[in-house]
Image (cartoon, rainbow over all chains, first blue to last red; front, side, top):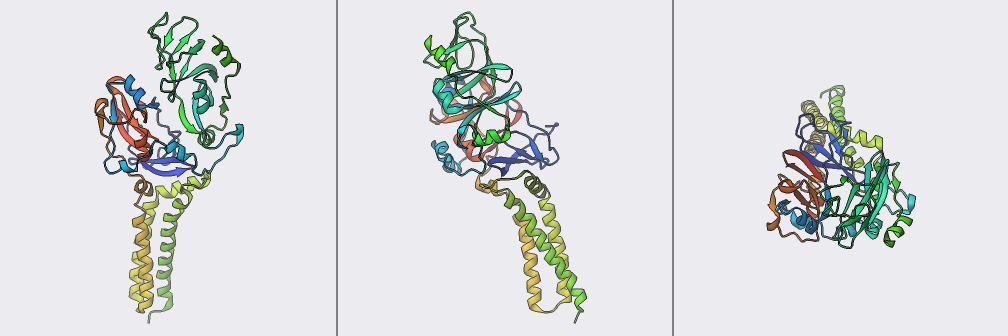
Length: 229
Length: 165
């Protein structure tokens, strides 16, 4: 940032989204937006690094040469158990946006791109496995991975359908595409779709930072159509 | 006996320092606390106080100490001296407490991150990770770890990043 390397610390909470403070300038930053909200760098934003939230087994199969963050000895006993997300559902909330019939802690996959913020209910995406939709001006697809939990979003106008192993086929070229969004056979072999950042967030938090968000409510007819193939 | 008009100002200054020290410590902690909604204006005010909190606390402490010296010299009564001393000690205590980041007491900072190759890790395949980069620059941050530390300062592929959850 401005030629400075900032070191961040957990420093507070704002409607259940945390605030960080950097050591170098003492500026306060909002976690969800990466925006400086108070201090010398107020108004600036951190650049979002593309990232992926997925199961370790799936990541390992894609990145065998990767490295994994180690536990901090002494703190590992306090780390969240696997059912953390279930427990969190019961924590109180301070914001509530009852539109669309969502509970505050319903999990969303949020996409902010092409001039629109759009929330895709995580459970609905998991059920549908492949979602073809539109965000702003562009057609997008959300694909559930072979682990049945991880989801990636791509910009793609082709008509896709999902195969049971977690990859997808496009009806135009008959190519098979893997979870990375790359065609592994057929005419499109070697091509990769453009990834779109989708973040996992609670409804109340996504809605708070994207007041104008639209919501995906199911593919309805299109899904029946693809299932008919 | 020293006239009242020489004693009184130093006592008022001690009390004012005490009020200031308590306010600068308590207000941000009152506004910015879990399980409470934060309004936009009060949050801006609380962060403004936080940014200048330590300087304000030091100022209160310095002023209180000077006022205590004056008060001590001009007032021989033991009870009054003790009360003035106690007030000043609370001011100093507030200054010390303002150095403590409660959030890092609850969730210890991750420090400099260390990594291990995929084949050496014992992480269960079903655990969730947050991943960045690809190939040899690929890094996975187990959610169980970063949902506790919340903030990990790292350098990935030569780029300084902060991993948050």
